Amino acid sequence: MKSTSFFYALVSSTWAFPVMDDPETAQIARDLLRHYQPRDLSQDPLGISRAQTNCGPTPCTTFDAADQLVSVTGQNAYQSPAASDIRGPCPGLNAAANHGYLPRNGIATIEQTVSGLQALHNMQPALATALSEYAIATDGNVLEEVWSIGGPLPADYLVEGLLGTGQGFSYSHNAYEGDASIGRNDAYTNAGDAHSLNITKFERVYALGGTEDRYTLDKFRARFEAVQDESIANNPYYFTGAFSTVVVEEPSDYLDGYNFKSFFGVTGEPGNFTWIRGQERVPEQWYRRPTSDQNTAPDVFVDVGIGYAAYPNTLKFGGNTGTPNSFVGLDVANLTGGVYNAADLFNGDNLACFSYNILQEGIPDFLSDILNDITPVTSFINKYVGPIVGGLNCTQIEGQSTGLFNDFPGYKYSPSGPDTNY
Ligand code: HEM
Image (cartoon, rainbow, N blue to C red):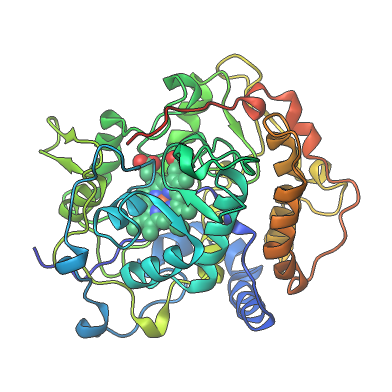
């Protein structure tokens, strides 16, 4: 099947912090934000979301088949994972590993992540670097600088003095993995398993394609609002911290049902869909973004802003208090000692500054339950993420308190998993 689409998604915008890794990138991000804010976004946020091209905030204007065609042959031929290989909650990463764009065992270094996601999606190296650093810091191994796209790192990576939890993405609850996914269950309501596809949820998101058989960012955003409401109504431990589980999907040109199923490892038709674990696949004739227009952290960051502005109910901090439908929201102003409020969160660098602060303060909180000494983790984060903040125009937040999250049972809930899984 011929498709000129590419499909790019990122999740759990705790990563929204790594927006600017150098002054030039920071400036691009500011320019983009100014372009949309505050006037444009406040005037017609839903219109902007609906009108957005599938290429993200900056439309792709060129198409070069030779540059963009993704190889699915030779060393990038599809192979189902071996029993010992690791796959996890992210279809994009699972497919990358099944095609050798990431190591087929599901354990990657920063360099492997950068080169693989550039080859497959034309993800900007700075973005892939920041994402893998955060994965290493929160649920990988900071000594060996590796992370797992799914379950816990195997024993040989868990060298003495494990740093980071080593639990992998599948069990990175509230760090990467978050409640209210478009295709997965909340960990708490599924015995800790937030990585297996829930075929009923898939059926509902698939239906968004409609008779025109097309998926857009805006459709996924609307669905995200609905799944968030469903989680609040059903999961007593529902929790949303910094910006959990924001799914940004950007099919350039188009994403149709055929490709959507391929990336999700699903076969069959509505009513009889089947998901077989570990079979996520890059479709034939799949085109990545142009190399001249890579997917950058600022793009993602602006997308997150557009999504929240268009669907303001999705901008939530807080959680249920132990029973379904008991959601208590925390005020941005309270979380930041009054430095920011919900209205100005999308101005300038505010969102990035706020995210970074939550990241810095939040990690020790949830890791300290598991690790005796979190100093190596915080110094790893400061080493890699610290310079990013140098490029930001942040007001010092004195009273920011992620301690307020402690009142929510879902914040402390920390499932752990089997040795290997997919
Ligand atoms: C380094 C890059 C990436 C990271 C760190 C990452 C991480 C994640 C994580 C942790 C989840 C689970 C979130 C949750 O349900 O709580 C997830 C879900 C998802 N990811 Fe990725 N991802 C990356 C790249 C990609 C790419 C390149 C694609 C697409 C080509 C993609 C598509 C998706 C989709 C569609 C979901 C939602 C799955 C569902 O709810 O069923 N991701 N990702």
